[in-house]
Image (cartoon, rainbow over the protein chains, first blue to last red):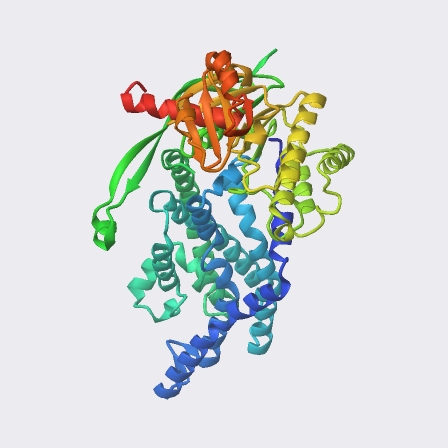
Length: 270
Length: 332
């Protein structure tokens, strides 16, 4: 397939899936709102913690800083926290609908990723961006161009990493068919290790240092922390470098996994 | 004519799991089994042929379609479709074949009108706009979908959806079209419309069709029947050839007076149905030619009678009976 042809095919998949996502607009709006509402739990819990501890800052983080952290997380975690490819792959394999995609003149993996994009794109444009803008304005976080650039790079690398991880997790459905339980467990591990439950500032220094060598902080702590100023430019750059290494490793691993899964689909049948 | 499909000694096995009954059985009693879905199947299809691939549920028909479309890879044997290995050249082959998976794996986007799926096909296959419009108008006209294809797919009837599935599979002008049970649960007018569209596409563009079905009406216009049973090919030939195998009997239907003694008529051949007032018997043609048989038909107990050749469904049913008998003897 030539580059132009491939691009046209990508656009075809993207366009039709965008239309499907927008088919029920009121449901979509409610989903977007409810996704963000989850941060209320963290706001209530941390407000109580600060109130009972009679202190204005914990580990150098004020209550307003902590609340800003979790509101930003609620704006990015529906995209970076858990990818659509996991459920899509599981459904494709369990219900046999993978055959529908395998008969198209485009690779299954490409279709899988492009199909997942419209919801993420809509969420980012209509939920993530306005919420993050509000947090920055209300919280008075002065953002330089370089901070925004680092934040954008973290988001992009994080998005690619979580989708590659999701692809490998989704591949397990070929062997296990139903992976909801496993996927739920793994998502919690990612969240805890990435600073999605408690910022990495609250972990012992050795543990936080070790976790910074994993890809998970790029999914939660690094982008949210960069935006509200608790992650330094140096830390952000280090995270991006680590993320790029992980991206290369995961891309290679995903390729190997797919070659095995592709054959395994044949032995299980669709 | 050129051969567009060739299968040589294809074998395909699947891992399946069987569980014992009860909760404990489901937890600990799972046994792995290997199921041979396709067992040494060989056949060829020439350009422009319309083939019906028949067989009971689980006979391997859908697996053959998936092997031919590159969705599955054979364990052994060779497959060639339009000169390509379907599994290795799947993406290249996809541009030249069309597939209708019936209602099991629909290609139409459920929450959008079919026109969005058609436009998606146009962009995915790079069909020029003018050509796309011409093909779409042609197919929509043949299948009477003018008032249908702009309505949301989920609001359409099964017949309308299947006709739209057929359009989606043919818009990119494929050379070979595979249809896996396209008419299950579909109403008669829609089935007839799809059958007409198949014939017209073969006539106008020389498209080859391979259709799996359980609906006997779908077989009426096909050139050849391929029958699978337990993954093996048990018949490959024309309808005429199949019919010739069943010329050994004709169907005699007797409409009797109520309460008439049926025992004498039962000796005429193989009784297929026997109710008070009605009998259906498979009779040897040599019996029909006997003068006593003709005299018997004027018996005062017989109100009316009908002699006919066995229909396609009757022939298929008899074939399945024969296969089962042979299987019991251990011949197959």
